Amino acid sequence: MQDNPVLGQVALGYSPMINRERSVIATRLTVFPDRPDAAPDAHALLAALQAVWPAPAAGSDLTITLRPLDPGPVSQRAGVASSAVSAVSAAATSAAAGAAAAAAALAAASHPVSLNIAGEALLRAVLAANPPPHLMIEVPAFMATDPAHAHALQALREAGSVLLIKGRPLVPVAPEVLACFSHSIVEADDDRRGGTPPPTGMRQVTTVQAGTRNSADIENAFQRGAIAVLGWPLEDPPPKANGRSVVPTDIQVVMELIKGVDREEPC
Image (cartoon, rainbow, N blue to C red; front, side, top):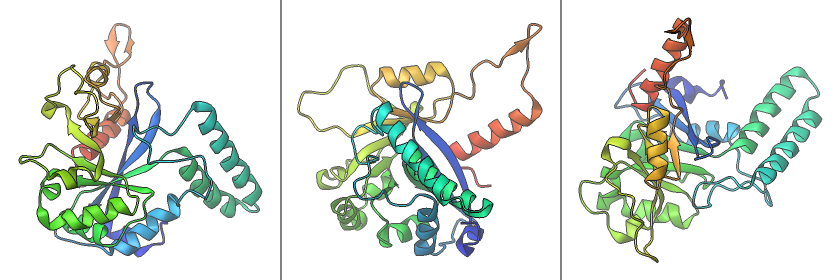
């Protein structure tokens, strides 16, 4: 994957998507173009990503189209992972071949990926490139409410893509477009849901909560009905030594970088 020229035109960041049991159920991959107005080759980008996240084999137990996001029972996940590890072992005829096989097989077996394209021009190009259905795609709310994108979104959904609407729309989303989305990504500060469930039979776009910073935020998100949250609780009180909080400098730097990715700050 590192030899693909398109990767020199983007920066990548990731964040785990975790469920109530604090298990990782998906990876959110954020793609930053090297320039805000740049639009790297979308086909090349998708090909590079598929080298790490290949489409599940026919008959595979792993699925990413279930609602809510759930890779299946623990025993099922263990069986998939075990098969992948066996395949890696069989393919590892050399150190280089073993490393490449391990990266591809374990990435495919672990959990799905949700693409957060942090650049409108590149996202438009990715949508037009007919991304494979096993890559979940996040679409900003302002694009979901733009009639110019309605046909493309409906075509992707009909092709089997899992779409997530990102952010709270400022105007109503057309019903036929809203039906294209399986999940929404909502910032904690923008979440105005209460604890009362919607009427029976009303279709829901399930919520993945963003902007949770500590364990209390995460618990509140699940109490409000979120099916998952983005990121680990980085602002929980650090461990103490001799009555004083101790966070190593290198860990502080990593935490700040992760927070920057969550906020989609340019690298």
